[in-house]
Image (cartoon, rainbow, N blue to C red; front, side):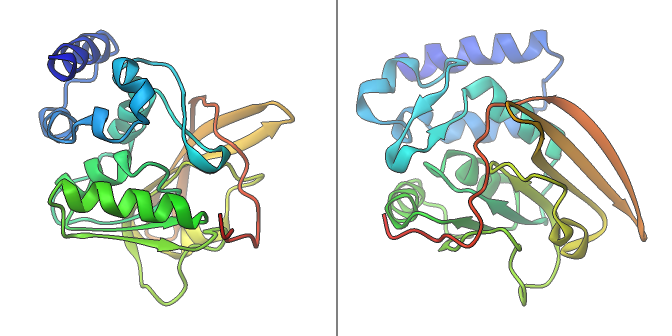
Length: 213
């Protein structure tokens, strides 16, 4: 009951923002968010509040997670790269729409937890790999969509290098000591269009650290 009521309330809030993408909302509904939050936060799984998880990380509020995915505009057939698997919720939603998802996460504890939840959801087109993600994934080719939930000090080069023409990337970029903005990059041929979208609470990426936690 909490699941249905929470999702219904989320949909109402999203529609008020103009987000009514049926494929995306169906993928969110099928990915029971309460299974991805720590047990003590099940009651607020669909709220807009930030939820702490292991290793000092956190899950963005449900509204922000869907807002970012809406701007990413993933379609069937897409290959998606995610930097920062966290609990695996966004990863799983991506996996319900895209053809293949490769997700990087620096904490082993989070990698293992995300893998278990994704397997329990029956998704077989997702790979979660322990890596720091600061330089993308050399040798994995290009992606139609790239999403990061770890903040970069400047727009990282790999976004341009690992994106197909017509591709879209969304990543949080630090614009000050305590300000972080979600940026969307669209690639057309060798040209890039940048759009600064909205402020987000994401944590900075710590370079060269794939932690053993």
